[in-house]
Length: 414
Image (cartoon, rainbow, N blue to C red; front, side, top):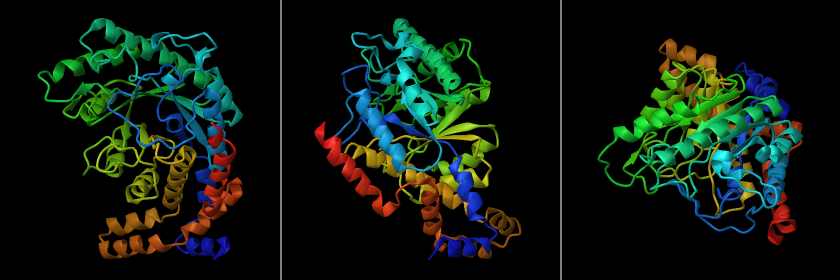
């Protein structure tokens, strides 16, 4: 089937596929740098901590800023649409012989990230790194009862606010700064309130430093559990939602791997839209737990995209990928996840949402169900291929051939 034939099929339902493609092209989605090097970063040689881990040892991992940037370039080449670059503070780049601890980080340590973003006309998002550091004491950072430890991590968060503002000023695109900690306990705690009160105070101290609220969009991310913190995490969903609701200018961030296995974020998106003018979303694929598998064009991914589009969330929900798989080619992992989310958004933009809503509101539920099932077999693949063609990006069947060539020419020589 040709694109023109597919376009006609959608037109019968009142869908303009050209308009959908044009809109999708301009929706920014952040690509996370930590997929390309297994969350290692450049500022320390210790283990990955904070209740997270990568699995696998596929060859060709980026081990230097230059290698990671080269891999990013390849991902950009293989993916359509508007992108942001999502950076963790642990990816600071120091001059030879230089090193500072995380509470002393400055914009100059991220100058090369700005150069990469400007080259691709991309925005930058930022994350303080509250893990993988000898300054984490007893697994705790912003909730630590040791005041010296807690103040160190508060200073780190404040430094990251200044860097986030620098990102926004340099790129001309607002920076989402996400606060996430892995603080918690492996077994049942004796005090659940104290760590959360310290966490609340710590975030308030971080946000007390001056910053331009039009340029920096701070958010707080929840977590239900992590490896080694199975019984309790201070930054629960209730905590982060309540903090964002009671602190002006702070957004909640939902990661669809950070909930109980039977919860789905697609249902939470319209709930939050009733109360928050904007919020952030990390898109991953949990299998039985927060396992951060590569995002695929699966049911929940598609359902999240539908809710964003049908609820008018484009421009209000800040979207970013967040996963890390070390068992496969890392470039394919990052590019596949991005392309899968693009497919989900395209499908959502090509659905007759107004008619489906009308059928629901008029209680024509049988007809609604039939239409919901019918649109599943519409020729979305032809619309997707046309989008790739217009963006000058290789199609799905030639996609991995490009990756294999890069692996042979570049990754295998590392």
